[in-house]
Image 1 (spheres, helix red, strand yellow):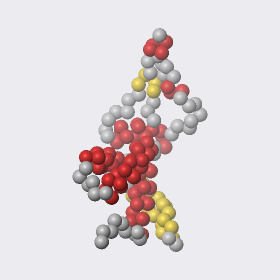
Image 2: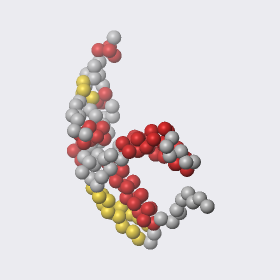
Image 3: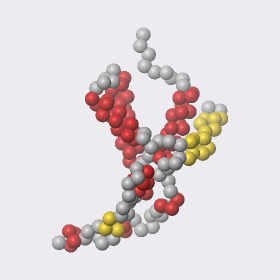
Image 4: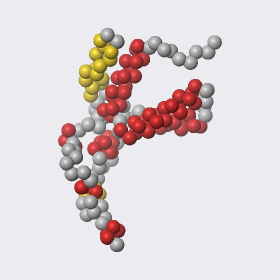
Length: 145
């Protein structure tokens, strides 16, 4: 008899919850949405035994790359079957209080002749890889002609 799942895994549920909490702190939202949209296809390939299929290997490469910076500490509290996050920290967190944008002037940085500023998660990703988070001046000569 073939069993494809374990349905009662409290330890697994705690680890999964803690991992997702760390992902929200260290993974860009758009990357997370892309990864989450591909998870059902990945699960289907594994379920049907296509472990060595090129599609599964390609999806695995995306998942592996998305998990590269997921590191840190998550503190959880357990009470009556519930899991609650009571703290989390990471050396590669995308949250930087100094890079906050209050949204009072949306898209002003995209006007011609102004400096284009990177979105905070993009800036943090470049900085964590050791690349410069350079600003670029948007050329308005193409828009004028």
